[in-house]
Image: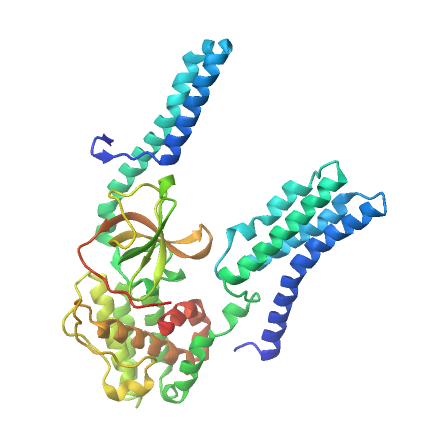
Length: 174
Length: 282
């Protein structure tokens, strides 16, 4: 779904919640006259379960779209191995292969990106512009942050992740 | 500067003791609960549940002192409080809950040990050089004796600035370092290291593509380098391993030089030992 220039994606979880509560409401309204009398606010409430995630996704996607050019200008290309605690708060650009993807169903994907020097977690707090799959070669723009806000190893708070044409042959690090 | 082997040994043994105490406390509390229930001893089972709470706090501490944090283990005291602040009225239910909780804590402890690395006693991580760096830094001690303090300071600053992503600031430190090395009689590899770091910092700062020709170490410098010299030409995929290897060697040489030459620099370099260890273990 597109709103303005922003491609909005609703997470499977939000859709599942909407479907479950719709079914519950249908069943309840069939068997209970009390519920039927409340449909005037229950139905809008039900749709809010979809509207709120869509609105949040739209807002975060448009914010990310606005700051991507800033990162494109300021982020420096670094090897993953050189990303360390002293770089917290620095915008970086990395290129690598997607080794694993987690939490995509929440619209909060976390990618494990590897280059020739090492691997790092890349966290995104919204859905990416394009569908990213494992083994894709990608370029990531983001900021170095700690995994759990104030503690933990350095990870990248991703602002933009895009597939690139370049290929990377990774050494066997196992 | 490094902690004595006795201190390190005491730290490791206390960690082992804490690790053993987690299941002992958790199952011990449950066992006390079983004992009190079987002999019909009128006692508040919250006292035995307190052992589970203490085991949770210990597990959270063990998770906290690891470089890689496990958020599940870190939050177990919260769950312990939720479960045991108001235990079930039925003593059997409380004892079953304690046993299940003790089993969960033990499983989390095993997970912590195998998936989140080894724990480091507080203060040790900052105090000692990571083992992977020790050999290289000690090997370079004789070669660093000639480094003037000013050059060593510039080496430390250039290393710290580069690893902190402050690429624009590296040039000044490298230029100063090269000047300070003039007529010092030190190996030319130190000058080359400054030149490599300066050049690559400038390329990164200005987001330029990697050049075809770049500064690199000569075979004569190899005895002072952490890693063997790589071929300096592109492979079939267009990747030139020599470029990255030159930077790794240069950063490590500056790190080791500063560490060995002026002990006062060590307190600054300690903030970046983890990064140096990552570079050398490459």
